Length: 285
Image 1 (spheres, rainbow, N blue to C red):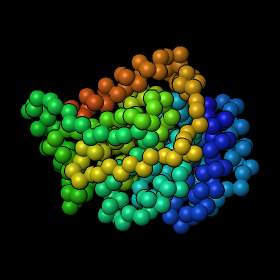
Image 2: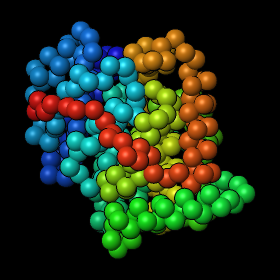
Image 3: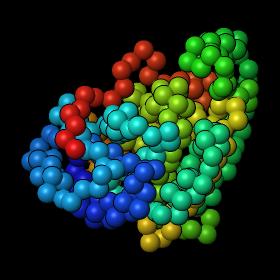
Image 4: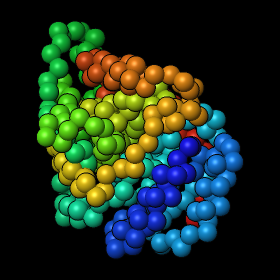
């Protein structure tokens, strides 16, 4: 929603890139239509020369913009072994695709990707152990054993988060933090994006933090080249179709990040337990 101007700058470029990887990569786009802008996007996409490895869906069931729900919806339509979040203002970098395709299946199944242009630092969260944590950990292990009979993924005993540092890249936000990826089986195992978070803010951090709190997961950072930095956008405009319309982005993001950090402290690695994620879609292409 409210992304037509950005999508018209990124989609054709991304089409050109994925045509080079027709057998290895697919691009999935979901258009959440709630007004005339969504219909215009639909008309425009249908008029384009689309690559064979492009999948396009439409949904009219998301009445208000909610990023975790929208991202879950798109991710669940993908057939690939590895899922990468791509907001409508994001470009795909050839370097990213080539590096991920160079990994073997075992490596790919243990990798969390980030295209963030600053530094990523792994930081331990120190909290006092509680009996509730131990019980929750046992429940989590039981859930994982059911999902993977061989116990391929287990939670780490220590709590960790991924902190961002801008350093020499400057302090300006360029939209690359949410350009992240992880194995599809890990995404499904931890419940995808947490749909209890606010409409925007914190959802990408939350997903990375929870995935990294599984044993054996490693972090692969491939910073986006400046030529592929996202199209600039206004946060107030981003919020205008959400229930947080008119809200303060910094406050919303801070609250969401706090909730995500609290979940890690409580070892709540799995989100959306017992809930269907995403909304229904209809495939167009």
